[in-house]
Image 1 (cartoon, rainbow over the protein chains, first blue to last red):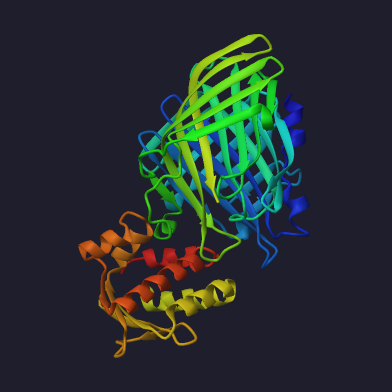
Image 2 (cartoon, each protein chain N blue to C red):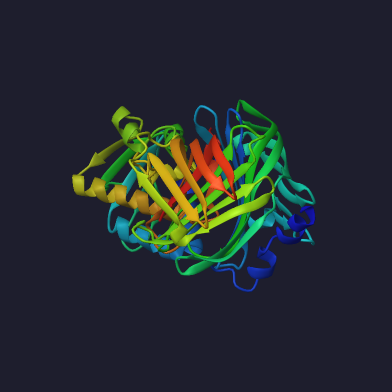
Length: 337
Length: 133
């Protein structure tokens, strides 16, 4: 399994963005489902049509009592990619793919954010190719369960990470923020590490979320895929609206453009999946959220907002004759055009 | 030496014109012929429309909107510690002028922010703004 990671989770930008930077995007994304916190770390590269370069960015947000963190954009001169495409350096920040997982170093002194984390893969990665995203396409690789160790300090809050469950995905493709798409992207992991189930959910819609373009629920048992439910075998129902304003909007100046407090996050998401005798029901109830905003690439006076929400997930059902029944932590991302 | 706010704004709009020309044009359209006078910690300057975006030192006799504030208050709003509405209600940002001109000034501010968040030079200018006198 270890060789699979180093062989498949390499950076694509040097191969795919050099000739045609317009619309190219790539990011490595990590979520730590800690016992008393959620941490989200994202290293991203965005192709720049004007100068042909790649705009690097680092996002670090954490939730304990509320979400807080930082988003920092760097000059393309701050970007280094190793010759084997396995290591990405952005300023003082570094993400390295190792045979057994990932090393992440965070250093954002302007925001008083610093940390070092090691992620050990505990499950087989999976690749989804050519996912339609508006007029573009995206590929993604995910590792549904890892074990995280290390520490992360945001201002005066230090988070110790000791054998906590985590999720990773790596996305690359060519698409445009603000195009006609939206998504709901979730990772669910059990509260008890000995519980063997891990779930990943993705639903792609149009921007107004009136039309579902694709959806899938990925269920892993221990380190292997146990069931993959796609399209019509998955049904979802979202209802209500989370009655709580976002804890923060990042980067902070975007708050001037997003002055409302309506969350755009549902009160509850229900996922029901059936296939070949397997069935899974998952319910995610968001508790709070942070807004990550970026300029639309298709309209000069619009913004694209990613709502990162933490909450409780309840999962039940059976797969391959094995019963699933656990309460876990969910981190769901809602992209609303 | 700390750079004056008028100088930072002048450099900012110059960068917008070269880095994000379409967004810069939207700011010009939003401002139209309006002249906005700004008083930041007693430093008087103006942003003048009429086909371009000119930052001029000193008072503006024909200003349609006048904004009085401080460098600290600008940073409070940009860092989202205070919302713009709250800053106006509490008086850390004061706006005066005819309603249409104030609305035009507000639309211009939003167009300027949309442009600034798209331009790679602006984080450096924001860092310079933080270097308080």
